[in-house]
Image 1 (tube, rainbow, N blue to C red):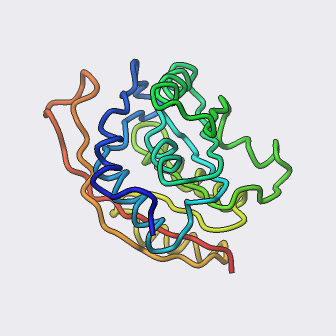
Image 2 (image 1 turned 180 degrees about the horizontal axis):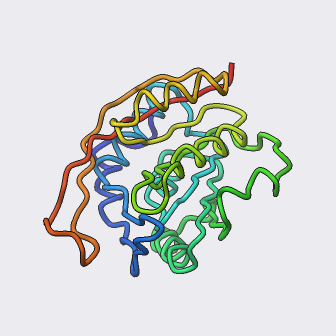
Length: 212
């Protein structure tokens, strides 16, 4: 069950402001509201992993997933974002929703395990990581590894469908259970000057991971 309806959740998330100054080096793209709402609603209604939970959102950007989780009844949400401007966007969005149980930590996601001494602290971890294009090859898997390290429960992550076999392989190596729970069409709008088209569809998988 969910405390609000899917349609209402998406309507709320449509008002979340985008990055004010997106950084191409960090592959900053806002998670589309329709994808965020569908993913979060499935996570809550199928698995009950949001309401009443302590949640970590890695690479949170302006806060689309964090805010959605809070609206679905999370006890507390911590978003982690390396970029100062994006962290400010996150805080401004949370202020607009008057959310008191959501905070943003400006930090490098890859340094978190050392910061928290490899202790699983969070009931549920969410991430829509950089996909590893441009100069960030492998960053998506590195984010996923951190998420699994810090989760006491399930991890939900979005990855390009083209990496599906690689993600399965890494899950086996790490001895975690992996389930492909949805196939999504991620519409990336024209964000940077080098983009030739107004938008492009990217096939994206929504995964659920759990330690064995």
